[in-house]
Length: 235
Image 1 (cartoon, rainbow, N blue to C red):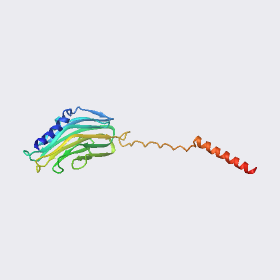
Image 2 (image 1 turned 120 degrees about the horizontal axis):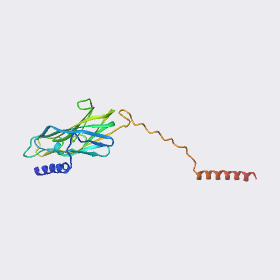
Image 3 (image 1 turned 90 degrees about the vertical axis):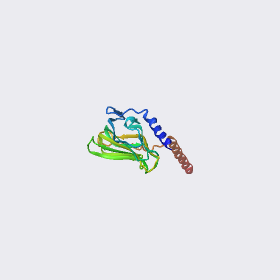
Image 4 (image 1 turned 30 degrees about the horizontal axis):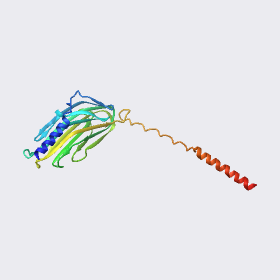
């Protein structure tokens, strides 16, 4: 069982980390008019007991036409020889700017071997700037949902995003694991500037029904036939 657990963790790390470019403060990604910049990654408490992965093997890539994706294997686990509780805790942060930002969606592919014994989660805080006013908080977890959306009202032109990524296992089980290899961020904007909703489309007027040529011909033939019948009766 221990070999199987370690092999699974190694597969996660090799499958994603090999293609991940390091996250640095000079990295800038613009996707669909949304610019992500000033990236940083730091381990507030590092890895405790059985952990694998971290800031060094995380990378950030474009996602679709309106987002970014963090890739890299992260894991916390216990084994028969290390049954103590394990914890991997890192902080991801960056700045997001656009003409208008109205919603921010967080998603991930976290897995846990046993609900309550192991857990993967990401708690995201959105602020006006580093140390600025908090605009809202969303989270994803293997104990809850794997996707969550924050609506900004009014819409913003610049926000500072912090992700607290935690993977933990309980020492009560000898073979438990929590893993994350993908964290997604997608954004939508209203357009026209902060707080300005996109104008509703002008309704297309419904055209009046116009009789088809065949219908007109049948109507004309009927009127002619009715006239002939009246003349026959008179004569």
